[in-house]
Image (cartoon, rainbow, N blue to C red; front, side, top):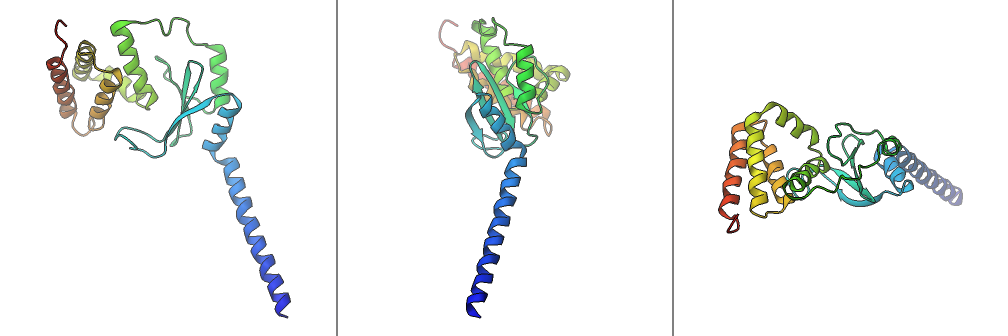
Length: 207
């Protein structure tokens, strides 16, 4: 009797384990992030970086996985499972990597995309940083509707360039200001203005 009971327990345990395994397996097959990551791997996109939670490393970061392939760069967003192609002047996202691939085939990267130099190159690097970190739409909206912010941002990037500051640092300062823009627009603009003044104070001699 005890043997029969033991066999029943083992069978029940095995059935439970199998049910859990099948559930997890089915879940992984339908998880939109994992599905898109498998698409990326098949299409030769290489995983370059991952932010596992919002605010990881900096207050303005967003959960995402960044991929690169050649000179192209794409970001898979954890919240929406949509994909952003990191290019300038491209106000759309993609539902999956198949859709992204179709777009790239029809609209290959412009040959002169990397030919910019000096201040223009510096500005492009800042704007690509915004796209890469998920602030493309916010920046477009603010620049289109808030002239004072646009002027403060323009003065900041010019001062950063003149001071020899890394474009990534300047872009990060702008995203920091964006974090409290909706709650206190004036504070956000003051932050940009003060940072511009700081850059001007450390401008290299002769600039």
